[in-house]
Image 1 (spheres, one colour):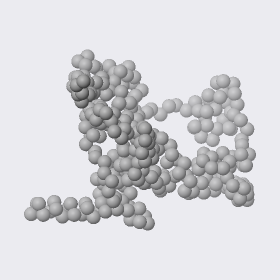
Image 2: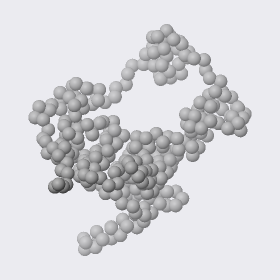
Image 3: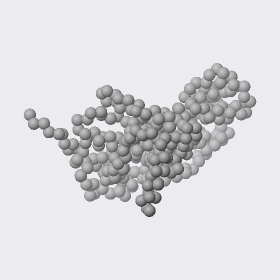
Image 4: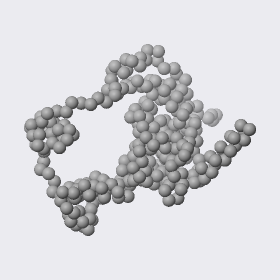
Length: 294
């Protein structure tokens, strides 16, 4: 029997087929205008029980309840409220000592004091980093047959926890995820002085991977597709991966947009390095550029 290396016909076809000639970007925008329009400030609805609403958000909630002839529930007691806010912010129930301390605070300020303490807790970052890890499909093993561990995956996890606890601005958070290895000056760990920014680039390499694929080219395309799917959904709110084999059926995304983005993703290599030495390496690179200029 003749054995030949399997040719990834499906992927090759996807990569060489041109976009349809009748693809009309403006027509797509008209079909689903809410995707492409900037958010508009809605008018605040009027309510019957104006004494219940403390702000505009309350008025929207109360307006919807009144339309269904419903009323808000009675305010929660301090004990119930404290349990709820603990679960919401840290994901953990309050201890008996924490409950006693909360009730010992003066009533007018006790809830504000409790929220400030919970936001300052290291458990805040642990809970909310978990939500972001779900977005980027964080895992500490490769899945598939042998389920091999991913070396140093925990560094990205701990980076997220520290970022949330440090209240890192979202724009900086995004930049570190997309180009954390190129930022100058890098954001450094306050105690160790290690490069924090470069750790944000670890997310594309934490997904499921086949350790010994039969079709290497197919596997490479699948890995790239997973990264594009995570990147576009987490940072753009768009399903760019749907344009892998054809122009997007619902959003105004060309197939060529997918492969333009895949070029960016596929050009990013994966290495295990001592990230603490990055500043030293970049300093040497600057010296080399100076010498070349001379």
